[in-house]
Length: 132
Image (cartoon, rainbow, N blue to C red; front, side, top):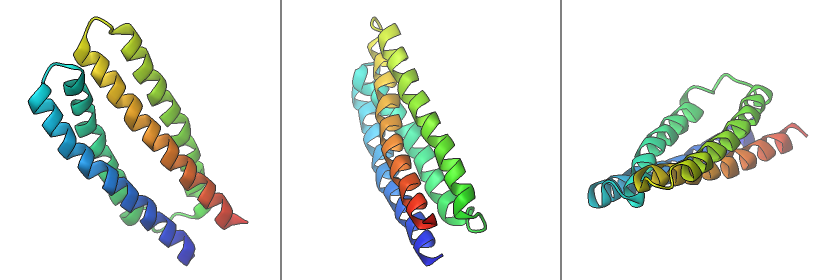
């Protein structure tokens, strides 16, 4: 159980180390580049950085009573959602070629979705190793 708690804390720290800088960088990009590709990326960095920070809090505070098996199920569903996020981001980029800001938003969703896909995959595999 100690390994499980340590894994949750490690994932939480990674999310915070990604989420907080995402918010800061996003604010700078949005303020400096406003309605450009970089501004769109900045907006998504702010939104997703806040989501990542919330998830980090949830991992430490709200999953204390949940079993590793239950969390594995949740993370496997998150992996599917991460793939959906990347796909939606790509669709936005392709369909908004005339709107740099929206293209940037799509790129921002893809960046965040890809990060979460990698992190969730690592988390899922680590949880599975704890079961065996």
